[in-house]
View 1: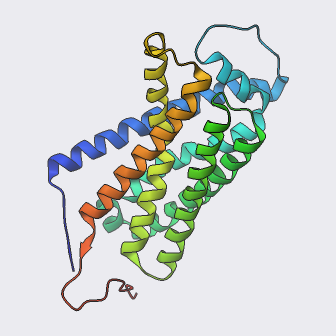
View 2: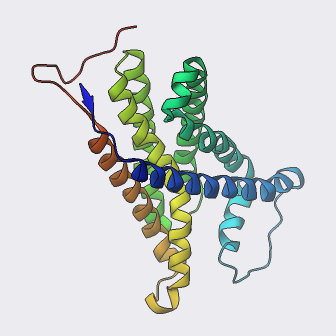
Length: 238
């Protein structure tokens, strides 16, 4: 069994992209936490209407501070730990750390996924039904991917475990990509004529779909090639 390995330049670009998106995701969590902790402590206080692009979004989350924090605090660990799961160097040097940090990352992912589904049906969305449906669809896919990744590693099916981990991580990281996409819609709204209620849902669909396509492309590019006569699914024993 051989593995197609992308060149060093491609790998550097990928890691840079993942690093940048991780920083965006961490920044979003830190900002949102800083805004919501006082609300959780002092209670929700309605603010006067403002034209600031993020004001309406901040107000929605401020109405549900506990649920939002349950969703985003594990997101900080998720964003920090999951990229390290794909480091071959760290796996070679400390397989035990890889396994335990992987378990923590999966637990965080489960909390993120379940809370995202609750938020999709229990909280208003700027993008309305379109946005809610996108988070429901990809939230379910995210949880399925986590479950299949866990199932495959329990059966020592390393290659399949890796593929489903990539899918889950890609969907989780898509939230960071959605932010600049929304920013682009805001920047071009005078030309396009689209309002936030019209483009928020579209931005979510674009972000999640792009990440899913990128994950599938990477999986197919780096998928191990089986030798002639070798079964497609061959569990590792150990």
